[in-house]
Image 1 (spheres, one colour):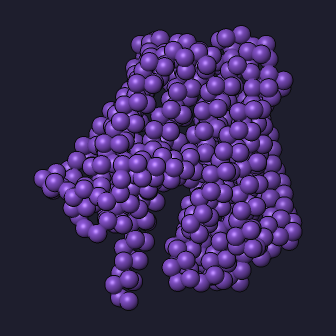
Image 2 (tube, one colour):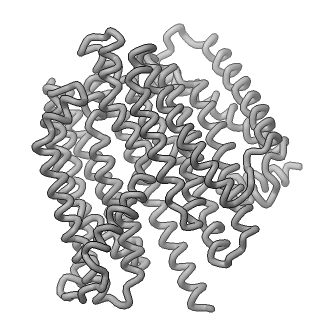
Image 3 (cartoon, helix red, strand yellow):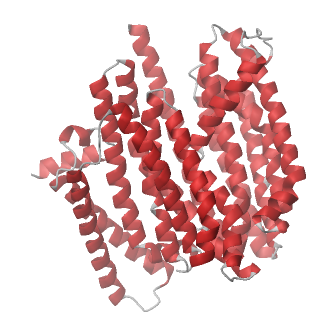
Length: 527
């Protein structure tokens, strides 16, 4: 019994390390795009974002998709020799796959660029393809260490990779800005940061792997066919679940600019508008980091209830995850949407596209709920529902985006994203409710959330309007930042008080959430 408890504590501790490193990496990945856009402008940002989804898919394979499956397979092996033998076999299979992907991107770059509506993207696509050659080692080494409950190598390599990659991108952007480089040259050099970052990440993992290199390993009993099937079927499913927003961006790369050309914009203007549209990506990514972190805080309780086979505890924890995700992301997202013109000006230097960005940001709410549902479903060993949800979202997005953009302009891209994600959420919700037989979206909760959100918006608008009356007609980025900080603080305090006074969470639920439990204690002491 003590051994089991110790193992559970090790797993929880490792999961915490991995979650923290993942949040750091995601925050860094969102933050660098703001100075990048400021340095290279809308068109330079468009060039980078057109090809970024290819990198994003590769990193999903190497970080959050395949390592999860490989760790599971490694954990099932009886000893170290069998584990090493299994990892070597997987490395060969993934190596063949990586070579095929690399070759496809190198030789297929002209066709991909043509389908994206911009043949000048060919060298940018070829630059990012090199990172796929390092994907097998990154996936297998991370999966091996995670399968042996050692999360430190994955965590360090993940953060190192992002720091190196982002440093190169910012350096390239500065040089491009100062030396007036061709923007496609800037895009190619910026994308070369991907294989270089992956190389540094591999070097970190090699240090941890040195003691294992001399071991020969024992041939695993699983056949090559069975292993290949698991890698592509189960691993592919996990990768797809982790890459929902990347898939949305990939569809955008093939449809948005074509739709803008149909709507009547010329080539240069369509690139500029797509660059403005892509400003939403860092905003959404930051929102998702915050939104999903609250749900992640309840994952240990969910895992424990599964371990102890406590159905009632599992159901209540699952409901809390969904409820907290809904409340926190709705309040945060609506506040962001209300302040979007100011946020747009502060971060990107202009207010153009603010309505489009505001609508796109609503996807934070939907994706957070999809992610939370997937955590619950995966906790029950169900991956199919999440897979169908992602496929549904991608199909809807692919079918309607170009037509919507062609009809109503760039706003259609944001609307198509929200509609597509809502379709995926509907699939997920049907599956979750069927499996746990509960409905976390009670009418009472939705009414209380509407009241809290309305009060928050009123305060934010009043503060913003009052300060705008005191500021010059064009206050600039610094004064606008101060105004947003005051409005956000006031709105946040209002939202928190409303949540507590309306009793949207009981005391036990509040104490299960990070940060909020401290505020509850302060609130109680004040009364």
